[in-house]
Image 1: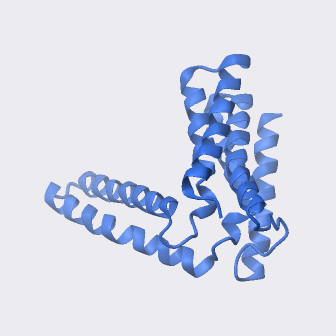
Image 2: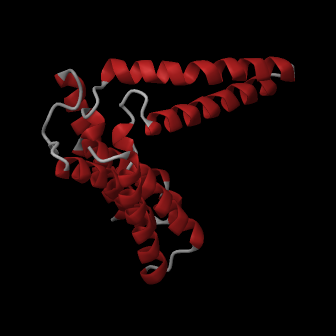
Length: 197
């Protein structure tokens, strides 16, 4: 199995290549190019989000915990609660959110299941295109394509190391969530393409 650095190098190359193409041939500015580079790099980490104790899982858990904690602090301050109460609640959320997220992932996914599948590449790429729609239709779609290519690079590297791409495999432990993943992936993809047309 390729190591973390191999996946980072491949997806980083894809992200930087997409950024360079945007700068050189499509008139992107530095912010658009930076988003494409980061989306491609992050795409290479997405398939390992369901792995227990993997680096991508730890990074994602920390990010989710920080965002949730800041959200709680902001909410409590908006409700005119004391700053100390907000900070205490934020620290509790920061401690609990990563564990809760890991429990949810373990409950609904298996490693090299849903996150190691083509639906996830479609969902991540299309979702990225939709989130960055403010860049303009073509730029958002291009950033989404780079993001999806980052996920695909991870799948191809794993396949080259002896694992299967298995695009039609079950994406989770149950057939219902697997079919839902394919449906949602195709729906997001159609939505992203229709916005670009």
